[in-house]
Length: 216
Image (cartoon, rainbow, N blue to C red; front, side, top):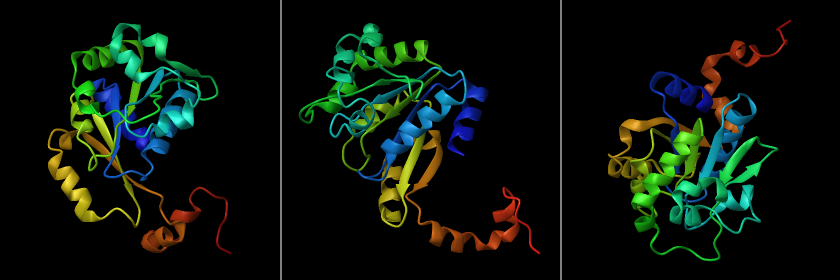
């Protein structure tokens, strides 16, 4: 469903840069960002770049390019030399711009708000068909506001049964800069048993649609 939503946005408006965000850490936006990028890369001829723009936790880097020694921060110093800092992931058929660091960056928002950041995203936009950025959690830091102006759309990740509705509303209320560009909201880490109970109204035919099973 996420793939279809972004695919439509690309076809209708030529959108290229999308950001994956969440309210708090641990909701699964790293997994969503990696899987979404890989799905586009593996099922089409789309040239895909996934960027770890979380200068605090580096979860995407730890999953995709744990051995990287340079990446996002260095690319901000040489935006036109983006290719020099990209890691090629052949198995996923995509490129990754990691963010390796031994400690958290205290001036992250300032770095993300520079003209070099704008130049870097522009180079990525010219080089790739699709750019997916993972941003830090919205309730924790203001970094996403610096990233927002460079993005065509957002994927908002919410953890099932844990993230409160109040917190989600607060984040979206404070995020007027991106509210009209949220293409989809992902309810992540869903309990399959509970979900089946909630979706019972769809009937048995819904569950059997993709199978050969038929009632006797």
